[in-house]
Length: 119
Image (cartoon, rainbow, N blue to C red; front, side):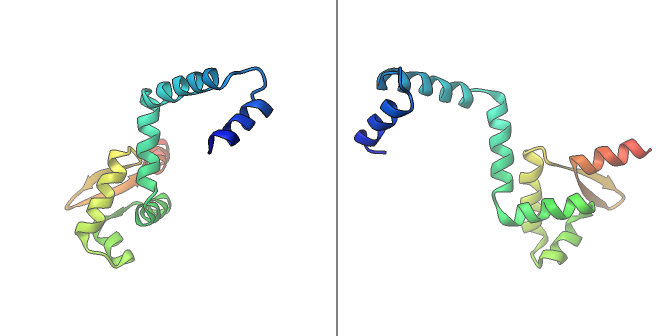
């Protein structure tokens, strides 16, 4: 936003505030957001789901927990690629892998909590 448009915004919308005060207040708000733990968690979630393949993997897992090999076949990708994307989803705390015999089955946290409630 150029300087004139910014000044017009301040004059029309932020009626009783100087440009300097407006910037100071909002920069402080920005810093408090960036320094919060909630920010990092939300950023990780949005970053993880910002990739189309990861988003689709997550949506599939919302419907049915699966292993890497099943997801690889569905998406036509190598196991290593799916594993990479699952790792990012796990780091964002969106999914959990549970060992079942030879396989690790991946669940969204919501599905896992529903399944635990049934038992």
